[in-house]
Image (cartoon, rainbow, N blue to C red; front, top):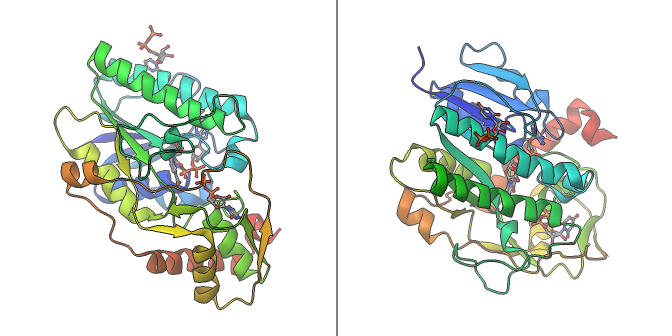
Length: 321
Ligand code: NAD
Ligand code: UDP
Ligand code: UDP
């Protein structure tokens, strides 16, 4: 009945729920598998009851037997607060999750996408980072469960590609923001917006001069789907993100301006292993997919602020408490 059957792991999370929205809207038959560790039922509540959407509560560290044509593997907590909550489970999710999803893809001969991360570059000494850069990652630090877990998942993807001729697509995602980000997962965009909306001080870690490049979620999902839809031998890895770089002070000032908040900037210690600079080189994605981000930071922030404002007005327990 539907043209394509697609599995999205982590489909109740921030990125996964937007991906499910888009796939359902275009008529794919979508199964979302999520253990709801950081995801929320409310992120996909509007999809429940549609004939081409199904939610499975499932932990990807265990095998999964479903019949699909494409797999997007997004399951993994993404913010330091969440991935450091149970670091062993974080590594298991990346590594065992990759093995299980690759085993599933191998049995089905299905194309499989991996949500990798700019964190595979660690605290880079090459700037901006091209895909050829091998990274500078601490293997025993507090971020290692995430960084090394994702690096090992990439290793597994490329070994299944070479050894089992699997059709893989590996994307290294840089900081992305938008509606349905977890309100208190400690990421900078959600922190600043929630602090501003509540009239609290904005917390800058370190001197606030470290940089990040923020991609709006809709732009990123365009790239995921373009990458998966493109036929050929295209394993990647490719960087996906917005190359426009901002300091955290600039981000704080923009959030204050757009919310009209009276918040002050306050400085807190910089967490260990916190990268000083991060900016994607997206030449490969441009060339391969004809893709580049379209949404400017101010427009994306305006939509994200409206989402968090809605949660506050509704009294959502995650934001009010
Ligand atoms: P998120 O925390 O909102 O979503 C992750 C989802 O995975 C959640 O719904 C969570 O419940 C689920 N999950 C976690 N462990 C699981 C397990 N063992 N089994 C099944 N489900 C599990 O995070 P997100 O921002 O949507 O990130 C999605 C993916 O993209 C992650 O793999 C993340 O590493 C990657 N990524 C995100 C960003 C970003 O800026 N948002 C940047 C780089 C990479
Ligand atoms: N697997 C799964 N669903 C499937 C097929 C495999 O979850 O439809 C898991 C299973 O747990 C297996 C893992 O994927 O251990 C790797 O599969 P593979 O065939 O690569 O290796 P195996 O361990 O079976 O030799
Ligand atoms: N950050 C900050 N204040 C906050 C939260 C984060 O200054 O309230 C900083 C953090 O130290 C880092 C940057 O913002 O330098 C981005 O942090 P985030 O956790 O969002 O992403 P990541 O470090 O994984 O890129």
